[in-house]
Length: 442
View 1 (cartoon, rainbow, N blue to C red):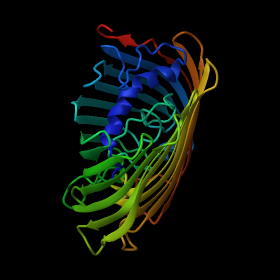
View 2 (cartoon, rainbow, N blue to C red):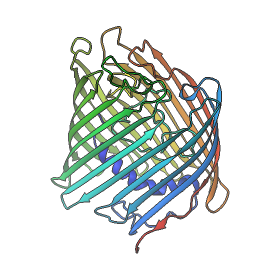
View 3 (cartoon, helix red, strand yellow):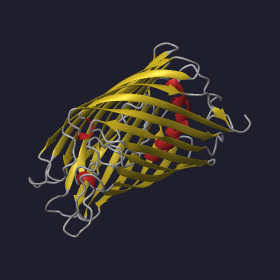
View 4 (spheres, helix red, strand yellow):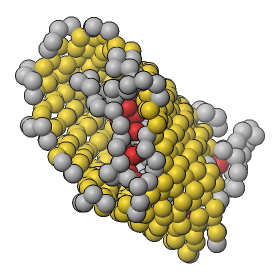
């Protein structure tokens, strides 16, 4: 199940990315354009990009034993059209890791596109994201540790939300399409309708094997999945600072052959949002969730609780997010469906004109939906990272970063590709970030 307004969050996140990318490597650079009252940049169009090169020392990452290293080349690019009512956004993040001493060499690619259409009463958002990654996305904009993009909003899809179970090396493609339509009945009341479809496919390669029917049982034991989601939410603005509402969410996950299994979840939630000040805001939703599987013996119907809470603080040079999420998800390529509890904390701070940094920490517990002891499993994971950037020229900066990945696995028989152990990634690099390119007339 996904949190309400997933597609809207993605769309507006894409709109904010150009300034985030520019601030990432050149804190004092002019990002160009003045935000309008609607939040869109008042320019005909803006293209922002950065290029980074770094070296990493790695222990245990992607299931590689001992100490290895890699040379990393990465780039980010974002385009935002200047339309205040119908903005279009494109975001790209990608690069190549040249691995040594057992660390695989691989490319990584992420691409997101979003379109907003607004009328007097309606607001439509359509978005799509595609990624090709060698492991579970958990770090920064690219999803890869050590490439210099901490402090940037990650490109998220409905498949990746709640993906706290970590895999070893296993190349996978994910694609997610989502849309929402918001209708404003009055200045105080609106309704949001949303839906999405996503898939994850592990590619044949090192460690792949086949089932009895000859179908590929996924790279390194990773489990392929499809996820369909839909929902509706009604919001009523009690005051300028407080909003209450109710939401319904439906999701259906299925797993292709050789598993041929599926499960569905239905949830009803109460929604509360409050702005304490211009710096501090809270959003929360909680309610019961019913989950049932296509095999009632192995995966019986269960009643649980789903929740999503976010506390946001932004003031001057500081920006922090503290959140908690509980929901069902597809199992992150590790399990055939799971209940996920995820507590996370992230932030960015600009210390001086030339120094700034970002950090994140996330703890997750993933428990299988299966009730049969032979299939039941749980995963506890902790990931953390921090990065410091130092401006060394008008368009250049240097960075140092550290990432920690820790995970323990309990009775995991569904797949052999769950990461189990401790990994460290230490990286140093440089980033080139020119001024944004303004396309068209202001």
